[in-house]
Image (cartoon, rainbow, N blue to C red; front, side, top):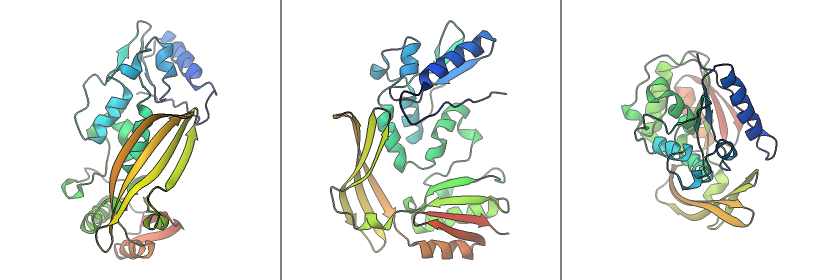
Length: 273
């Protein structure tokens, strides 16, 4: 059985790439099969194994994640590059910085990488078209549903009904909600900023419209900076069916979920029976 080792630190310069490369070589020398997945936009591990052209390549983790988010078929070779030393690697490039912000609006974004590594049929995803989806097995374990607001009200009800039928008792679900302040945020507002290593991620509202009683559309612009230079810019149109926390809690209660409000943007629901 494969073992996954994740080397993660949001701060730059902590030795993630060096540790990954040395650990991979050490395991390969023990006659173990090793696959490195370089998930760093700076692609230092890829460069360390001789792949310095990744920014010009379309066969990287960036392309694979884009394929999954578009619900297209993943290439059979997963763009794996083979080393003579017995180490395989999926390279990254600077475009991964843009992919990271695109994941904000992606359904089941927590499983995109897992879908690449394990295949679509082995994991449970929550697609936008929930009417066509059925769970093959009972679900036991924590599920993060993503943001309910991406679904229309009838789609929300279908999803919750299917979860009610397929979840084991006492399984918790985390439900993310839209911050109410976004409903009144002026155009041009910067709504988030985060730094990772040399990269800085900023999100702006570039357009906002109310298209129905509870329906809104936003155009968000995600910008990735390296110092003062813009590395990537992604525009994303987001539709939202806004419901108050109280309405969603009431809906969950009617469907036999115990509920708790963890914050203004996060709810906890547990199947009661």
